[in-house]
Image (cartoon, rainbow, N blue to C red; front, side, top):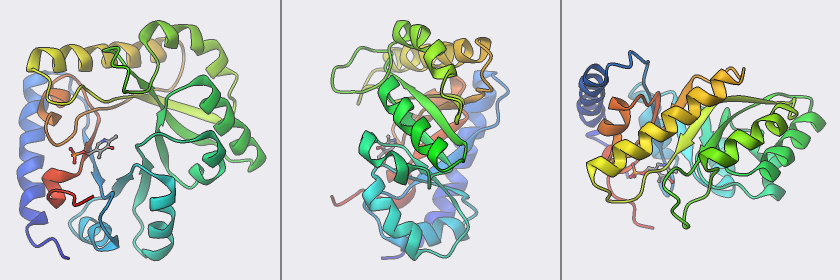
Length: 227
Ligand SMILES: *Cc1c(COP(=O)(O)O)cnc(C)c1O
């Protein structure tokens, strides 16, 4: 399969992002992470040709064969839950968005130390208390900061969140606003944490209005997924 209208879709999404950015007034830079999960490497190649430099996958075992098969120079981002026993393989990603527990942070830190390589990560927050979603509550994150600081091989670059599916705009805004507060809290604690990964195909404009710096877009770029 190829993606003939990707260039047009991207142009439309970029202009919607820019308008949302101006409405929100946070004066941030916004970058697209093109989510290629379930698609073949043709999606990665099409995205690269259309000017995308960041590609997102939600599973290590799906991403690694694609990384090995594709020749383009994009950055790979891990956006889905990571099992601790796959921490070593996660070092292949430029950014792991989904550090959703202290134990996972510590496992990644140990893997990075063993490889003597620093790993960029985001801390995933769950600001709505949805049981089906992973991540730190704001209170848990506050308490975890000292232990996260001990993870010397991790560079905590910001916060990621997933809003409830099909939520009203009011709920989205409060979830995204709470994630922004979490990012600001991490930054105030002395981490070099400027990134705010939030917003998917259905809610990216509200996310950008609330300060998103990385939007994770799949369906709106590549069409619906068969899996
Ligand atoms: C699949 C996925 C996305 C992209 O979702 P779309 O609605 O297709 O844009 C974003 N973030 C995460 C964590 C995902 O798993």
